[in-house]
Image (cartoon, rainbow, N blue to C red; front, side, top):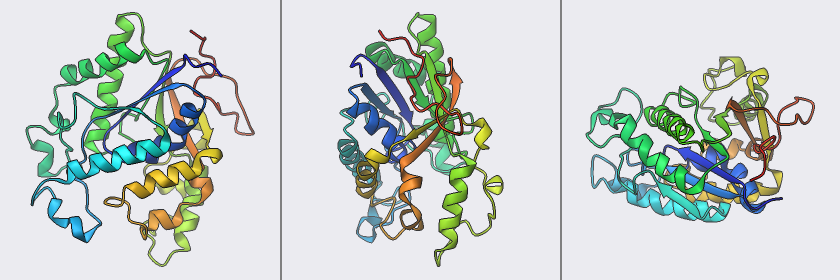
Length: 286
């Protein structure tokens, strides 16, 4: 493996990096690639699942962002990600909350950020690390959260600006949830007494899932599952140990991460599904 490979990931809030790309980051760290994580907000509007922290909420002390920053640092340490940053510095942009809430309109809300300004802050990081591969969300932010949508817009605009300067990423991937994997998750949820997705019978009904035919890459991070699980546990304020998500998180679900190739040439196919198994596939070494 070469050590001059560089991958940059743009996520919206602390814990998104672990959920959507934890084993991917851990794998490429282990392989010697430069892994750069850019997180856009501190996650100030998140739900709090630890009673002792309830008064940190946005409508009380409004200190959840600082707490989540600590969780983020510890989670990244488990994954081996040392090059981790907040877009424009910690606190530059605020968590907007779910779509349609009044928190979307707060002056520092990321949803209100000037796109060109935020993209140029992202571009500054790109100039430094020169990523061959960029990972972010799709146009809908995977599930419609305004900060995820804005992260997509910022990352994609920054990539355009980088290309204009002659060094943009060769490949851009969007995180995804494959139908085949969602089917397994829904099956696990049905075995739980408290099924938060009881209304969905199949993956096709699940709003965040993509048909397997639309998936381009699968990272099988079986060797890094324990690191991802340890990172998850650091986010106790957001993902309590008794959460249905934690109870349903089988090794298969945790180990596999899927992506859609939004820009660049596909690398070699692998496995029965003929998906890429390396996000650097086909990228010329530097």
